[in-house]
Image (tube, rainbow, N blue to C red; front, top):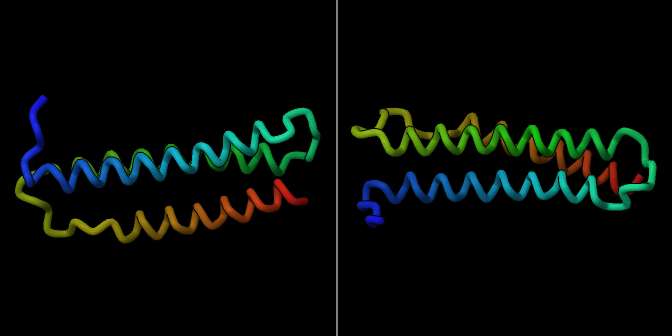
Length: 105
C-alpha cells in the first residue's frame, strides 16, 4: 500500500472525521436500544434510536461526498461544506434532545 501524497491527506482526514462522527451518532442510537431493552418507555426511545441511525447514514454520505470533492483535481472553487455542517449540527442537537427525553422521561 502506498502512502497518499500531500494532496490526498485532506481528503483522507475529512473521510476519517466524518466516519468518526457517523460512528459516534450510530453508537448513540445503539445505546438507546440496549439500555433496559425490556423496559417499556413508550415510543420516544426507539424513535430517537431510529433518528440516530438516519443521522449516522446522512453523516456518512456527506463524508463520502466531501472526500470525493477534496480528492478532485483541480479543487472546486467552492469547497466549503458550510450548509452540510450546519445541517448535521442541528440534527445532532435534535438527537441530543430526543436522547435526553428518551432516557430521562
